[in-house]
Length: 250
Image (cartoon, rainbow, N blue to C red; front, side):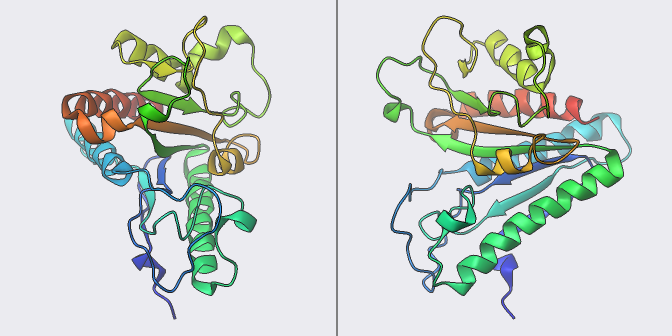
């Protein structure tokens, strides 16, 4: 029997928060054929960033609680050129590979299992799906940003549309306000300039509020400057985001 833990790292935490990293894996599993279409590159150091978030949230709980509170996480170790976990299964891997199919289903089954566990235990669940982008690949004419939030026009956060006056009072709005206050450019967040915005991929659409009652999901894209080049900025972003997430689920 295949040990799928070699390909997917996961942990079940004790707060209703899950951090997902589908594109950070480096393992080019030889027995899985390379995908022939779609994006094949990885989101470098997204797994490291996610684990830094988890550790910072644990430290926050140590200050005010006798019980360490830690999020759940699920992180792919497999290179995206072999399995793309943020795609519909039909497009995610070469279907001649039984192992690719097992990895894909293991990742998504585990994700749904933890979401349903959170809902049963806490009455709600929050999923943060972590990705990366390269600033120099931003289309010309778009505002330069360091983070991009994807919620498919808030449908991954709420099953029905909410009044515009409430947009800033949910987690997405709180994240935007926090990073604007820190002068760290984030999209969406500018009323006039063209935004390099992303709606969010398969994971947040499939596990968010429009599909699962009491489950919310946000895709967060981190620039290569945050992930690779500017350690001071990375630390500032991790501290700010971990504080917001910790407050949201406690």
